[in-house]
Length: 171
Length: 107
Image (cartoon, rainbow over all chains, first blue to last red; front, top):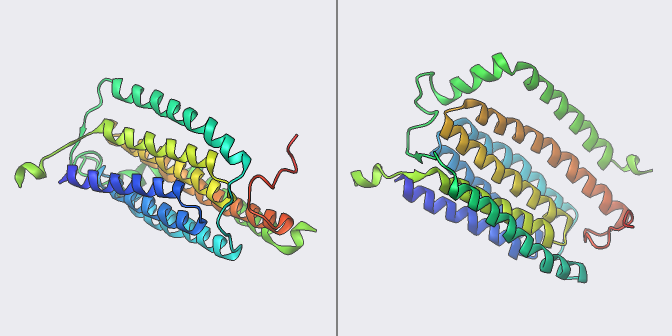
């Protein structure tokens, strides 16, 4: 079951990510990115991170991607053009990316002590309680200050977004 | 069917998937010529890194890894809001989204 779910949703992830690269219209790229993020939520569930799976769907596939599609539609972004710069980036970029991937993959394949993942293991049914219990215990005791500071970060981000996007900001 | 239920997936497969997604994000960042799509590739890279955080949290039974992903999500939300506001401001000033035409600060 785990293997089937992993193969199916990893396939969705890869297909969405490759489609993001191949599509020339931004709205198609945005929709394939939603597929990637939703399939990643399923993979989080398989790895016993229920809270993060829900947060992934709500925050990433929901809030952030809605913002992206809104901006794509608001700016009426058309299909992108191929320029000289893009051809150079293609020629230099692809070998560099393949090199990065090769290095990371070699490290992962050669790494010792990596186990196997089975359904229901991990942080789901650990003795410390459910996944959300453990998460909130650490988050609201040990890491309370960073958690509260993030709310200030979000507030500043909201103010910054409003100031940048408003008409009066540019004059 | 019971053999299907007990099947397991090596941790390294998750990490390899994460590496491939990250590389696709880097490739998209390099070859895409639209400001919004470039920004989407950055989000893809963030997601790939999140997947490896969750995988390692599973491997080492460490809940802090999942909390780190939670913080990354919050910062990504703030980053997306500010980044898209910047994109709107750039579009208003230059009336284009092509990264090759936005070269005011190029040497």
